[in-house]
Structures are given as structure tokens and as C-alpha cells.
Image 1 (cartoon, rainbow, N blue to C red):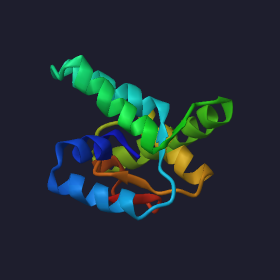
Image 2: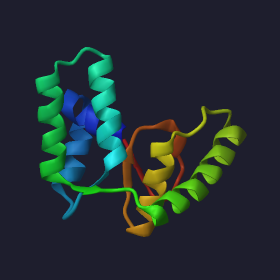
Image 3: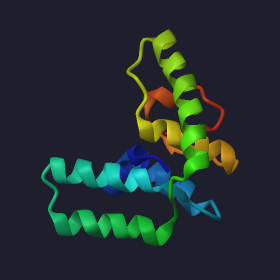
Image 4: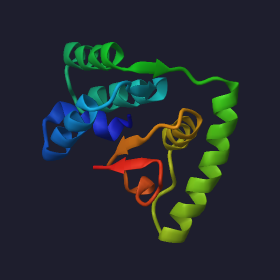
Length: 130
């Protein structure tokens, strides 16, 4: 799960409803620890109260497997970054984030799909685009 998808889920937007449908239909949800940090930063930066931010992050922890970044994923993430950067340059898009590259590496390692609406992932096989 990408930060984008979790945030839409909590907003209850149309995209968030799609995320809910996807989550309801799978056996296991994987969320990188970097996604938790990214969501926490976004909520606090945007003035969401600390209690709400913690509640939402705990919800994610309770409803998905939190994957910690290790040396193998770090290297695979670096290779995925190079791939995403090349794609972004050719399409005139913004540079990928560290989290984007780790998500792509995790999706490949675990044969999982990335649930996101982030434009950097558009057209990538490992993605369910919302």
C-alpha cells in the first residue's frame, strides 16, 4: 500500500472507496515502514491533530503487515529508483521518491501489487492504479 492509497482511504473519497474494495478482496496487505513515516509527516505538516494521526497509523499497523527496510530491499529499491527516474525523465514527470522505489522493490520481491494513484506508477505492471 502506498501513502496515496491510505490517505484516500481515510478521506473516504471515491478513490478511497476503491481502496476499501481492493483491501476487502485481498488476503494480505503489505505496508512499508516508510509509508507510515510519510503519512505521519503529512498529517502533522497539514495540522491533523496528533491523536488522529496516531489512530490512523495504528489502524494501518493493525490491518497490514509492516515491512521493515533491510539491506536487500535497500539495494533493490536503489535499482528500482534508477528505473523510475528514467521513466520519469522520459515522461516529463517529477523525480520518484525513496518510498516509491522501495514500494516497487517490495512489489517485485513479494509478487504484490502497489495500490496507488501516484502518477509515477502509471503504466507499471505491478500497480493497481486508483
